[in-house]
Length: 147
Image (cartoon, rainbow, N blue to C red; front, side, top):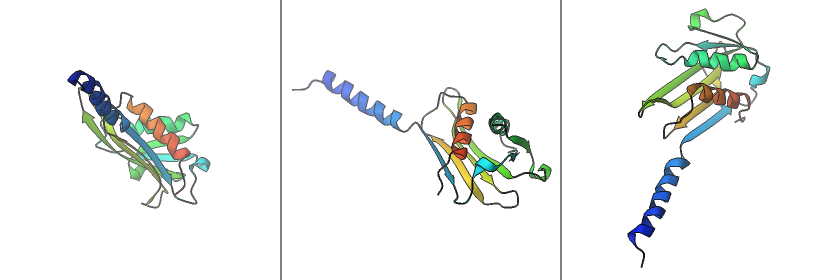
């Protein structure tokens, strides 16, 4: 006969494993025929609702790769831009603010359709800075799987 004391640790471990199994999902896709490796000049469109400076973090991640990255509204995009970066973010609060969703898309300057996309979706708060998450997504964009 099993006692409640022997069932509790097993139940607790099961619930804990379910919670930790889906903490964060990083994903990337790149359309066939496109490759970010040959691009040198990026323009990040500033999102006016971004209160966390993600545009600057994206630019810093690109610049750390030796690439040129500028930020601003679409009307300020330089002519020599090879790819436009747009992003969407969502934040949650759980005893502190944390990033729960971030999608970074790359598209050609004259088109609205993205040719590359990387996203982060979390189900529980990540204990890493948004800068780390941005760098992981940029890495996945440059090493993304062709779809």
